[in-house]
Length: 439
Image 1 (tube, rainbow, N blue to C red):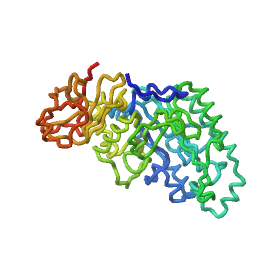
Image 2: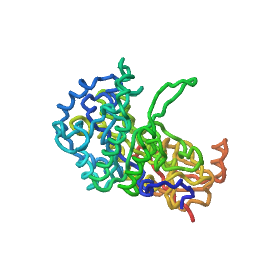
Image 3: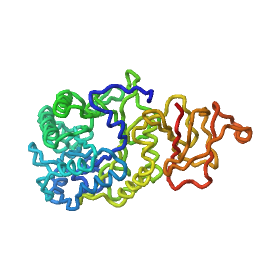
């Protein structure tokens, strides 16, 4: 069994840490703009201009069954959909606002269709809900608000009551937690407390007190026992969610130093929502290496797709998902239920290691394919058998010889074993070696 002890949390993270890989879906009215989910803020678009999209939001090609099919084929085990992003537009039939998909040409509850499709495909279902709301009349202006530079913004804020907005959020979250059956993840986004520079306020933000986060979390826990809740309300819960970074170590609790459940949040390109002209799409190598590296550090990995305004995943997103599908079909054993390799196991250069939860198998992911030999330091008498994972073909093992020593003037850490590899790289972007460890 793995020796790593993870901090206990209120929610059930056992299934989550077993499944390891999920799909994030950022979809909203901003897909019509097709130039970033924050377009309203970045371009300071007035309500009257932005809301013209209401009459054109018609996702006639929305097929969540196909989304779920692609997610499952890619090896993803759970999904999280934006029910409401910062723009305030609701993708569900909330009774607390008219600013929703049922009042557009879509004419139906899009969240319900997502839940039914993904649940039918056997995937766990999560809801993203934005704590920020640039549409709501009681949400005060701040430095990330589209109307932050209005000359009368301070005067307008005097008329706004964030407590009324917090009550509105609870009402909507109650709808989400009661109308769609079992929900596995509540993904809130996000808190940004006031920051200071040289003792003076630089960014007047919002945090747990503004959201009345204790009440919000208590409501979710009451309605959905065991649900996983992230930490972005400003109150620690179950899940740490580093975004758009590639961590190299397991996330630790900032006060106790304990290892914590965590999830790396990443995008296929440079935005979360659909961006027609964005060009920084990740390479197949990078897509796989990010997943593997995250699991090698004990984390989960959620990769985002941004559907078009018509409701389908564009060809670039589908191609990226196919990269995962092609690799996971043969190598998913090195991801599901796996975690960081046990302390003392040395990772060879150009590789990443994961280890099964029972500790019996070690997986060597070859980011850089070596010529003929791979040295595993300190593994003498610890490996019973070695094979490539994609086809279960045996890999010959030998001990460290004088010949290897002469050709490795840097020496070796501990007594190694040598794996004899074919000169030609196997037909995988990242080949994986499966090592059966001795008891």
